[in-house]
Length: 287
Image 1 (tube, one colour):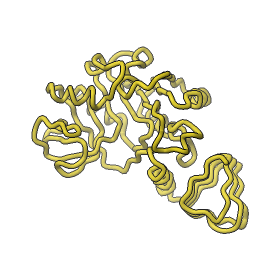
Image 2 (cartoon, rainbow, N blue to C red):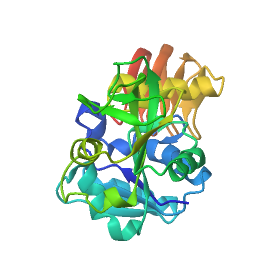
Image 3 (cartoon, rainbow, N blue to C red):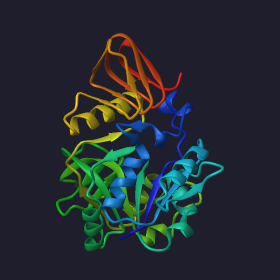
Image 4 (tube, rainbow, N blue to C red):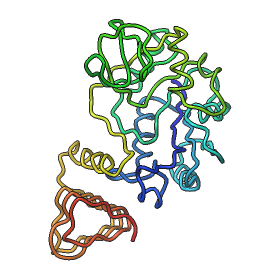
């Protein structure tokens, strides 16, 4: 199985003030941090060598990886290098060959084994996970054979349908060798490759996915976690909920408290935090 690179070095500006509390990849979704969900998905797909890059609150990431105990390596960036630069810097940790790349703010039930098989069978130098849309829509255009013919506004041939890039992909070995020290995988690697006729393919993903990059999408990911389990609410280990509080479509993290009188509705209460009812449509983090 290929090695995997989780891109987690972003500043998380769209998710502030939550990312003032912890690294974006460690915000809790359901019963565990976001990064733990991604690691679970990769490991279920047979991935053994995993590298996570870090910049903002890098100590948080290192501490989590140490607790995880799963042999994950951390590539710390003193300066932000961009998505392409991040993979380039981690070259020794990743080893040679193709690499599976996963943005750390993306929750998606992608079949990792099927993605890798599709990439290896196609002969493509890059295989991008894509949610299908009608022709001309989205940031990816795809032809009848499943080849990518448009990225953003750069089009090299007629497309049959459009799609939205789910930031999970397999980056081929030849493209890895041309990675810049700083730069963007789409703008500085894939689009130039598309112009040159380098084969890029799409891997269809028809299930919901979540870009946990804003507070609204972060809450949506938590509510989806409840829905997948058929739950209206969830209370973590050692959490305390007063008898006068009703938990309605709310997640209360481990060691958290729910006090007051009334409903906690559509809320996410972080581990160790205290929420006071009545309260609705809120994230409670720390104090």
